[in-house]
Image 1 (tube, rainbow over the protein chains, first blue to last red):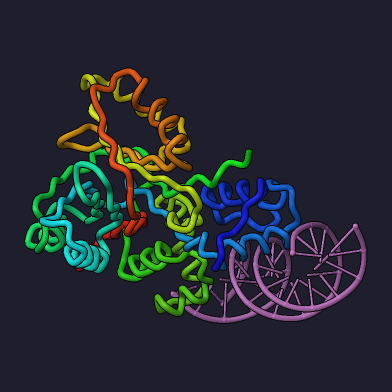
Image 2: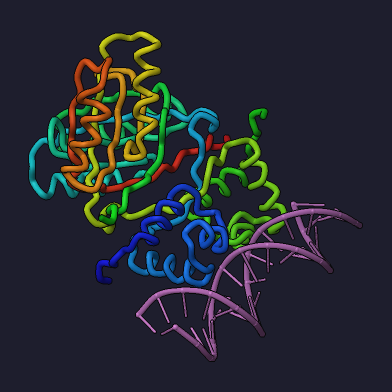
Length: 159
Length: 159
DNA sequence: TCTGAAAGTTTTCATCC
DNA sequence: GGATGAAAACTTTCAGA
């Protein structure tokens, strides 16, 4: 699965697909200046290369009832490979762990938890963070307002 | 646009759609135990209620070339409504601001920036955070590994 | 190798029960 | 909620640049 070379049209298509993937091949072709079949071929290429990981419905966290989001920072006990692996396996096993980033800086991981309320949050946080091994400390910031929630990535701008 | 009552099948459908929205109505019906037309009606209801905000393609940040993610915490100068509004307008105007959360706790906002490299990051961070008004301080944690990146929300579990 | 077009298939949509 | 027919979209194939 080699790296895929992207031209200007690819960047346009990927931007469009990240905004709204429900458009038809014809509509995408119109916007990108390409025929529907050409658009389909390119999208197939993105999928085959793993560049497009999946297509999903995004819920509005303000509309979903009883959603509680929390941003947690996590510092591990020690920088051993085993501690990292154990931590990753544990958070990845929990479907309410929405996002996990291994970071450099003040902490080792930033984790976003998505639960259905404070009771649920305590349950998940306890299992994943509080009563878990290898964790030196963690902080919790509850989300008051999810101002923007996207996963949009830039594709390299052509020069 | 009233709040929508969800039953067990709705929760199953919403979970499925958040995992993979490319499935056909027939496939969804099979999994949820419903006819294709009933599935279509329910999905239409989610859209009308704004519960499903949009459908998007998700890129793999590890496969996308030259993607640099950073998690920033931001503390505003003062807790005035104007300062918050000014900050929100500025970050929302920038497409490389991937996520923004207003939080309670150690800081006021958690921001995730998605750029095409360090030069680009500096440019965006400078515009949005460094040379911006109303910001008392901010921290930057660069992402070494995006272990999990989803926007999956739980829908309330039926009792 | 990539594009565009046409034929054949599947899915979706709207209306009915 | 389920079923049917019409419309639309997608997939495949093929020929040209």
